[in-house]
Structure formats: structure tokens, C-alpha cells
Image (cartoon, rainbow, N blue to C red):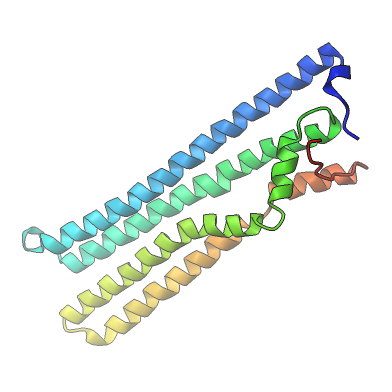
Length: 215
């Protein structure tokens, strides 16, 4: 049974609501930062393809082998996207989760608060894993593609410089790096779940957590 907000002491309400408001501010702050990094990742990928296209179309004017230049651009693009992934999912996602779970526990401790986060968590019981997979794929797909392209461009350079036997090895090397990078991104993103970890601590303290809908 949820406690009516009409029966809550005014001073208590003011103190708790300040905490709720500050948590909400922090959540929005980290959400904005993550959206910015994802926009930057998309722009970085487009810029990488632009650089590859420039090297391919302007190769007579370039002083170095265009195949190696395209491979270098692809590799640099891959590094840039991986740095953005690290900031987004390994730093700010964890900070966002830490704020979210504190608001979640506060809702449980003060039953008169609207259970916004509790309902959000309950709504993602079956879809949260799918959402996280899609979020990881947002970074895995361009990283894997750029590594495969880099290996292919190096292989093209070998083929054009009388070393055709090394071309397949280069292509396979690019594919192997793509697989290794994809597995690393997936595992590190799943390394630990801040929300579940904090809820476990809360449960071990003798409390029970069950998301309850707003009645």
C-alpha cells in the first residue's frame, strides 16, 4: 500500500524532494552527454568515409600510396569511435546508472514518491538486454567494418605491389582484429551492472526491492 503524499510532513517532503530533483538533474546531464558522444560517433564515421573517398578520388595528387592512406584513415576512424565508446558506455553510462539506482532506492524507501524509476525498471525486464545489445551494436558495427576495410586496403596495397600472396593474410588479419575488437567491446560493456550491483547491496542490508506501479 502506497502512502498518500497528503500525509507527509512538509519538512520531510522538502528534503526528500531536493534529493529527487538533484538526482533528476544529474540523470539528464549524463543523458545529454551520452547523446552528444553518440552524435559524435556518427559524425566521425561519416568523416572517415569522407577521408577514404577523398584518398580514392584524388589519388593522383597524393604523395603516398592511396591504399595505405585509406587503411590509415580507416584505422584512425576505428580508434576514434572506440574512444567515444569508452567515454559513453564505460564512463557516463555507469555514472548515469549510479544516479538512477539511488533514485530507485529512494522511491522504495519513501513510498509516497511517484515510482517513475521503479516503473521504468519494471518495463525493461524483458527488453533491457535487447536495448543494451542494440546500444553495443551501435559501436561494434562501425568498429568492425573499419577494421575489415583497413585490412582489405592493406591487402590491396600488397596485391598492387607484387606481393599478392600477402593480400589474403592482410584481409584475414583485418577480419580477426574486427572480431577481437567486437568481443572486447561486448565483454567490457557487460563487465558489471551498476544498477544490479547497488540493488544487491540494498537487498543484503535487509531490504526488499519490488518495483510497484503507481496506484
